[in-house]
Length: 320
Image (tube, rainbow, N blue to C red; front, side, top):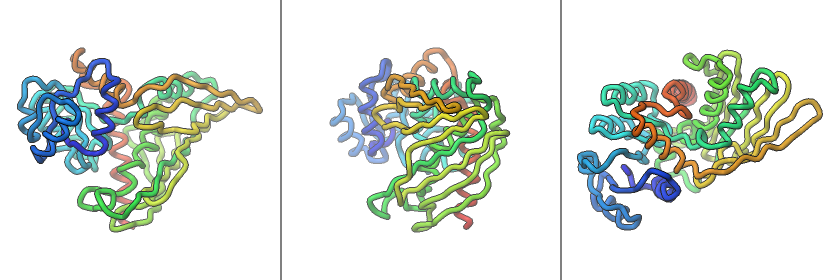
């Protein structure tokens, strides 16, 4: 583990449900912080980032640091021969994401952007409804993710740390749109971002909206770190719609409910819940064991598409 912060605590808790992963070492910019986290969570080793990356008994790393450090740490880890599970977003800009993926190719080690919503029966059920054709062609997804932060301080409101809503939680509606477009066979390599509106707070995007297009799929998306937004999504098809009342799930449990509407009929689909952080960790472990660079639930083409949208959306939002 690189970065003993708040989300890393959630990841460690999830890792206990993992079939293949074991927390073995903790790295930090502060060796003292790393040692304290390792002692608290039962890791055998700790040290600075470089000390952990130099260890032969570490196969993979989870990066849970602030956005602006992701690219550097991911590349250093890949060059050290480690598989990398990097907390979303992979990096604040599409150019930095390309640097990471190029390093993964050079090192021949897997890289996975940690979108927990991509793993488990819920994501598979969404994909099946899109690709199965039961409701016709997917045309539109309306999705939002926002919350009211307790203060206007810290990384969320720090421009130097790429704070703001778009990168922190706006990435989830974007990732869902990319998932749906991919399942529908729509092109995802040249997304169009328009109709951007944003409210700036402390120099970052406190709230923002946009319309994103992937071929024939249109995705109005909204995000905020200053007010609560519905955590739901509505997927519209040519012959019906699917409502996702809890589109993003929780860090400890994936979403489980889909409501399918067609004509005057409505049916509820309930799928099993998984520990999503454990699932993404296991997906990386399997990719490493099977000598694959990518994970099918979150392929690099999707990471690239998400990065492109986030880069364009954020640039337009901050430009006013």
